Image (cartoon, rainbow, N blue to C red; front, side, top):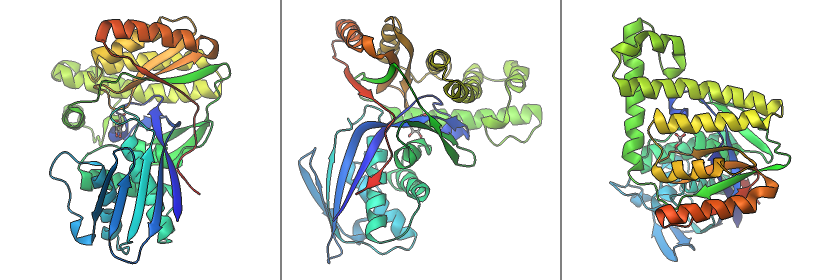
Length: 368
Ligand code: GLA
């Protein structure tokens, strides 16, 4: 029997930059998905999802992409499908899944499932994939089978993160390195708004398209070969501002500035300057709210309330947005006060209790 554990993730900074060939800086978190896989002789897969108290099964003939509304089973089929495309044999098995990563909270429960599944199958079949290959297979599963055109950040973070480190990824060439994430007296706190992300797929795809259109327009206007917003500087952008539709200017400006913030954030972590790091988190949130338009009233409220608590040095939404979670960088001795103050005001305003998770930078997926 093979036992795999895969974490969720939060992104510290570098939001909506991965599909723009930019920089990201996620960490794996202390919430995990556990998967066990037992090989069987028949060419069938039986899956037991303990959280949903559901059971399902499929064979090689059932690897058909979902037309709409993918369900948990589709993520498993998706991994089988990619491995089949790559010429690997179908592995009959019984799979148990249990997870404490909340769904729809923007903490990458689906990337955890894909990575755990890929790692389990690759181990069972002795396919000898590196962790980077595991991440890439999982990413193809989500893009090409499940049909969500996400960037590579989530699968990379889940597969490759290291304990006490953030993962810096250059999404243009997929190089990555581990950046020491030492918080001293501070702690990273996740606050789940409990507003399930809605319309996230269509809004997400729309942002992707807007960025692609912006690159094309700016390239034409400046007569330069631009493959992505990574190739455009802020002064290039200013030069064409009046010729661009305002929303395309805003999207581009956010992405260009956010990439610069990721680099500056990595520098401040190297210098141990958490105040600066917190400042960049706040600027990032402001950009997501005012320029990229992917925040929500609930996320803005949580960020404002958390930021007003003494001892909090940074707060921002994390993940795709439109609901989900925020992250807060808070001094350890004020965390109870933070929970109390934020819960009370959030409940008063929205009638919902947020959920708090303190986390360290955890390790990526492992096989036991
Ligand atoms: C989702 C996607 C990621 C990334 C973020 C936004 O989590 O899966 O690839 O684009 O949104 O930064």
